[in-house]
Image (cartoon, rainbow, N blue to C red; front, side, top):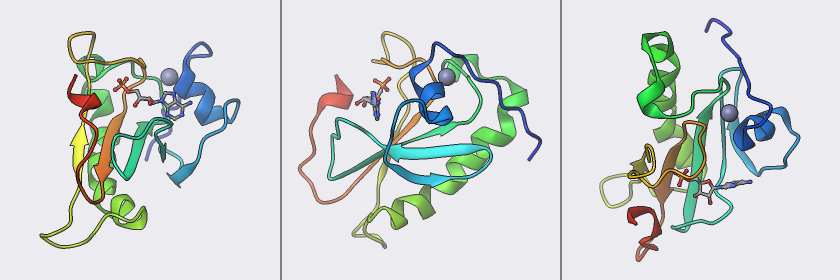
Length: 126
Ligand code: AMP
Ligand code: ZN
């Protein structure tokens, strides 16, 4: 993919991309990083982020079409690698919080991926 990496020095997740803040990585390539959520709401809970600073989904533009598509298409494989159960009895949930009413706390676009046996915490719905 064309390299569009632009990072914000004040952004927590940009600092994770740069390795300035540690994270437990699940997957990484030149375009995206996936790492475990520090406060998991399910037995398996990781975040996948673009390696370019996009504050929130509503700020994404058609320039970001490829990276957003790539993130979505990578999720099933990363989820399985992280231990999500395969097949119809297994699966996973994806969530994107957008803005204050969406419950977004970190303003670097991220997709939550949750999996594993239920029950799960309800925090992400609040
Ligand atoms: P959101 O509310 O969608 O913005 O979610 C932000 C998520 O980032 C929360 O689930 C936090 O637990 C998670 N988080 C915050 N800081 C870190 C960190 N340093 N490493 C991993 N996850 C983090
Ligand atoms: Zn950022």
